[in-house]
Image 1 (cartoon, rainbow, N blue to C red):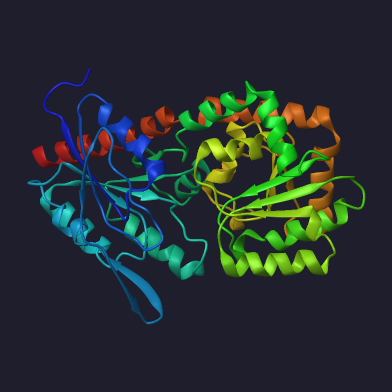
Image 2 (image 1 turned 180 degrees about the vertical axis):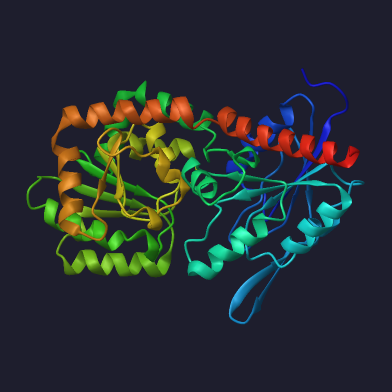
Amino acid sequence: MNQGPSIRVTIVQPSLAKYRIAVFRELASRPGIDLRVDYGSLEGLVNVAAEGFQAVPVPLRELKFAGRKLMFQGAQWSDASRRETDVLVLQWSGRYATLLPALVKARLRGVATVLWGHGYSKSGGSARLRLYRWLARFATVLLFYDPRTRDEYVRLGWDPEKLFVALNCLDHTEIVQARQWWQSRPEELARFRREHQIDGGPVILFVSRLQPANRLDLLIRATGELSKEVSGLKTVIIGNGDAEKQRLQTLAREAGIADSVIFVEGIYDEHRLAPWFLTAETFCYPANVGLSLVHAFWYGLPVVTSDHLASQNPEIVALEHGVNGLAYEHGNVSSLVDALRRLVTDKTLAADMSEAGRRTVEQRFTISKMVDGFEAAIRYAHRTVTTNNRV
């Protein structure tokens, strides 16, 4: 099917994160794709070893200018050359001072470019959005995380043939293995529940970084209301973030529910995370949900989150209200309590949504399907530029 020499593809990333390894490995395995990932290093993000593809560390600098943090990644510029690559994939972000020069250079040098990202910014308002769209006009194709944003660009007049979607997902291999290990050992799982004192009633789970945008204060308040009705209810919050953790612990104490809210340090080993997921009745991420939603669905956990799409990340497209989870009225504690009550008291509803959540990720949010979108964007970009160069 793929004749001729391989397409040289270079992806420039701010870091080499663990959750991207499976994506790049799968892309590199596709026939006719010769992949290299150039990656920098960011404070707070751990780089991991490449597996199944070539990866090269490159300098990345962060500077503050006029109160804004700007990033300078020289590889964006140097890779925009036919000597280096045929298709250059760049992160779609207005924070890169090197992005526009790289896009212009690539166009002049006959290098196809793929801008990969959200296509918008949740912060910065209309000015930031205009910047994103302006940068997009210099790229050969655009690759979105979700179809809703792609469709919005079509509505604004962009050529749909140049717009692609790669649904953001996780490598589910370790999740499935951990889930099956614990489910095949019910005695071990029961012992875990007893040891952590989460065997006396329903459990609500949150797993992610602790930051104000996630609105865990709403979950604390909802727990206080719901614990008056549901005996033995526990909310487990797993994640790091000292300042936010202290604030939330104070809220729990002031509400008189310190015993009902369990705080656990961040866990990054899937085997250790699995029993928490398998113990919970529902996963609650009050706002700003992202890949955690997909993570929960792989464990068959219904998800409760805000109905305010602007406060969410692209992965929110996986949520189908009333099917695999519930969307409560944004900022409304009573609405959040109602949604959580339904899932912790109605076992039939929870079971139906659990099955639907698993079905959602198994059918739509897999590495293979994500890379299908990636590959389609790369091949179209390469074909378009190659044709233009021949004219």
